[in-house]
Length: 147
Image (cartoon, rainbow, N blue to C red; front, side):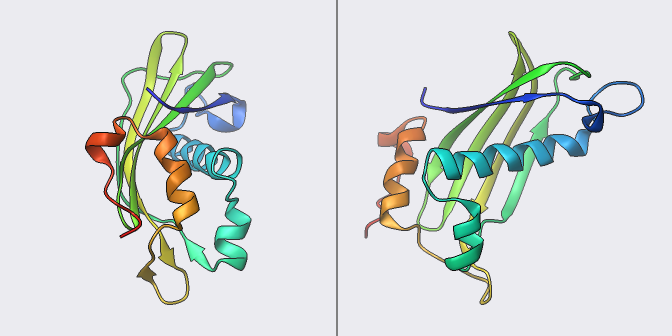
C-alpha cells in the first residue's frame, strides 16, 4: 500500500499531566504530517499554497479513533495514504503507530479552495499526478482529474 511516512517523538508539550497525549495534539500532528507530505512528496509547500497560489486546504470532515494511548517518550510513526482523489477534494487516511500498536487512526476530507473567494478549485494537474502515487487503489478510487 503506497504511503508517506513521518516520525514524531512524543514530547512533554504533547501530553496531559498524566503523561499521555492530549487528544487535540493528535490533530496538530496530523496537520504537520500533511504539511510535510505536501512539501516533501508533492513539491507543493504550504507557503506556496497559501501564499503565492492564494489557496487553502481546510478539512470539511474528520473522524478519529484512539485504540490505545500514546505516552511521553513514544515514537509515533505516521502513515498517510490517499483513499480517494476527486476534482477538488482528497480523502486521506492517517495512522499513528508505535511499534506494532496502533495509537490513532484518522480519516478526513480536505478541499482545495480559493482562500479569498471561498470556492473550490480543481487540483492542478501536476499535483494530482503526484497524489496518485499515494492512492490505496488507484484504479478503483481515482476520478479523472484532467476532464
